[in-house]
Length: 517
Image (cartoon, rainbow, N blue to C red):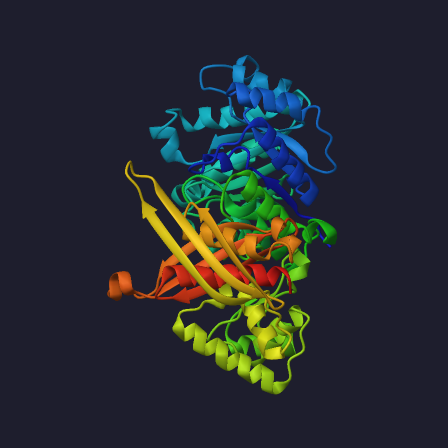
């Protein structure tokens, strides 16, 4: 298979995204993750633009990488000096990074309105800078900024810029859709024209932005036209609407277009890597991302679940394990027998046809009442266990009472009293908490902790409330979702009632009972 290389610019272009800021240590973690994924080039930024970048390059020089090559980023020389006298270029060529990526203008509009140089001087700036870096032993990459806009205005001059870089020793000339407004057909046509004009002397790359929601498609169109290096960011980080998403581009190149990019083992680490980078960047992972999102291979409609059960290719464009993701069959009012069977199998349960039919009926009835089992799989597994006849309650409730008292000075105290029966013995416990759920949780644990020591390891990690019928105001039906964990597992449960304390109680009991099933 023909090889194609990935160039990640998260540490430079990706940092232009709103809210993006990483410490040196976090940036090093990003580099390690990209290296493990098999990314060929990692652009680390400007070596001396600020103290953080200076420290980063110092530490990168000592970092042992398996595959990735570090690239330093800079600009072509200034208009009023020789390349050898340009302070910024001097920093680039004295850095340890073997690859130097220089950005230069290729759109006449920028020559006239931004850097204010003649066409001839701009070509000289490109050629001098690339040549100087090559003479200093670096591997130069030229980013032709705004290339597609420049080509649209003046094709011949845009090509002259590319030729100037290629003839001066650039290892790669990357065509940049900097404004992100180009469409795939145009990008493909222009990329093909550039490959035909200069492709024999230099490798062509592609760098696209996502302002028209076409960055991935534009990158693939350029590859189809002959580009053999793709720049972008895993998860599509970047300024405005972001850069091309390498987490979508990589599997498309390797699994659909037949290129040799990374090993199969590295590709199978794509989903964990994408989620890890979100975590490092303190961002919530988008569940709807292609290939790596939690919902990328989730099936909810009954017909879809039945199709996947018969042959996964009926509703999946590839095997999710190839990119490190998982298939998920979601329980909802749209579910049919295939969904119930899949959920039961996943839980290690056997349901006969009658039990499956009862489970479907109860599921649809409860979803109509306001339950949302897609968000609470643990509660749904308990429902299946009940229909399978193997459900084991932890206790039998006699009653509970919750009293909240506001005292002078604004202090609020909540007290819960619980009466339960466990194995024929009656227990009464009273506990205080910072609210009804906390007080109930403490009282219930106090009542049954001696029988169930594992309770001490269970922690309620999240509590969410939603009003389902706003028209009824304070009398509306309330849905409560609880997330719990015990150090090795995490699970979600649900309760629904017009009384928020009762809804919370249902979710709490499900949470504890699920831990012991």
